[in-house]
Length: 328
Ligand code: UFG
Image (cartoon, rainbow, N blue to C red):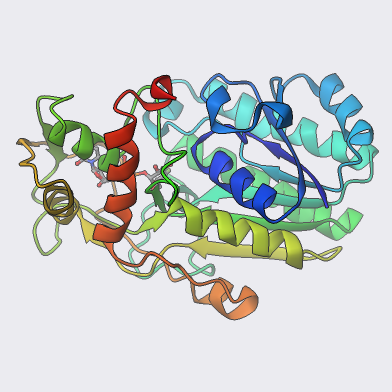
C-alpha cells in the first residue's frame, strides 16, 4: 500500500506514521510544519507543503502511486475556532474538500479521516456511541462533522471507502520514548500537569470544581496515541469501495481532572501545585466513549486502559525531552 499521510508530522500523525513504516507500508508524509515537527518523522519520508497547495498534491499522487490517504492535517484548538471560525472552516473543511476533489481526479478512493468527540457536542447520555446524535457546539467540531457528511456522500456516489475515526482525548507518547506530544501553545491536560510537576509552570489550573461529577471536576476518556495509531492501520486494511466506517476511539472509562493530577503525582513522584479556577466555556462535564463497535468489527483493543500506564509513557517523553522536539 502507498499511503499519503497529511499532517503526519503532528502528534497523532507521527505515531501512526511510525507504526505504518514498521509494518512495511510505503508512507509519504505531507505536512506544512506549522504545528508538526521535522524531527517527528524520517527525513526521507517528509514532504513539506501546505494543504492549500493542491497542485503539489496533484503531482504527488501519481508520482508516489498513492492508493490511500490518511488525513490528519487540521487545526485543532477549540477556543481559537470560536474566535476565528474562518481559519477552521477554511483549513479543516475547504482545504479538505479540495483534497478530496484532487483524490477523485486521481481515482484514489480510500480515505481515513481524523474526526473527533467534538462532533457530538454535549450529549447527556453516557457512554457515547456512534449512534449518539452529533450536535457540535463549536466551529472545530462543526468543521469536522461537515467533512464526515461530505465523505458519506462521496462514498455513496463515487464508491469511496472511508473511515471517520472519532478520537476522544488523545494522550501519552510512543512506548519507545522517541516521539511524543509537543504543542505550542500546549492546552491539553496531561502535558500541562507534567510541566507543572517539572516546575516549568507555576501550577495547573483546574477548570471548574463544581461539575456534577464525583469529585466536581470534568471527566474525560483518555486514549493512548499508540492505540489510536493501531486503529488507523486496522481501518486502512479493512476499507472496501463504498464502505462507510464510523468509530469512536476511547477506552470506555473516564478519569476526572483530579484523578489525572493524582496519576501524574504518583508516576513522577512530584507534588503538582494546583489552582482551582472557574469552568472553561464549552466544556461538557463528562465525555466517555463506547468503542464496542470498532472492537467488534475490526478486533481493535486498547492496550492502555489505565491512566497511570498512559501517564508513564507521557512522563518518559517529557522527562527525556523537557523542551519537546527542541531536545531531539
Ligand atoms: N483542563 C483543566 N486545566 C487545564 C487544561 C484542561 O482543568 O489547564 C481540563 C479541561 O477542562 C477538561 C480536561 O482537563 O475537562 C481535558 O482538557 P483538554 O483541553 O486536555 O481536552 P478537551 O477534553 O478539552 O479536548 C479534547 C481534544 C479536542 C476535542 C475535545 C472534544 O483535545 O481536540 O476533546 O471535546 F475537540
